[in-house]
Length: 132
Image 1 (cartoon, rainbow, N blue to C red):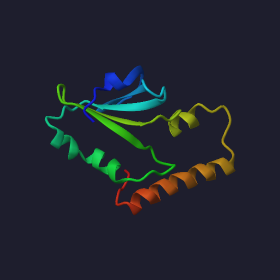
Image 2: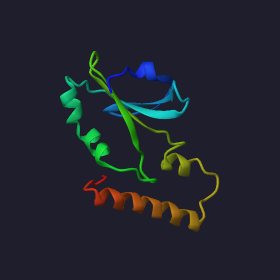
Image 3: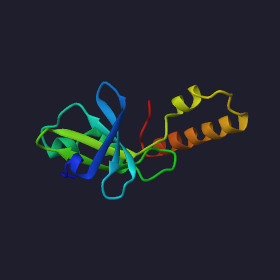
């Protein structure tokens, strides 16, 4: 995926930042669909190094699961060494969803959310991946 991120996606805004990456809200220039673009801050020196990147390898071996963020594609820019992972966009994190509520969640909804989390973790474990 050697296409430039800027050629395929329109930057909307920054939605998060961590020690090793920043997450951007982007719009696909062809389809108009919105995505989350995780731009890694560590530059890569080669395509081979990108192919050996553990997070990318992990997402590549996972099939689609409705309770797990899905890697749609990645963009490696050899000129800068920047790797960007393109994911489906979530409306918000579960933390933001819970903290911004004015009322408590019903017991039924809590059970449903916990069930979905357990399904996701079970799927990861079945595929040899342990989430920390």
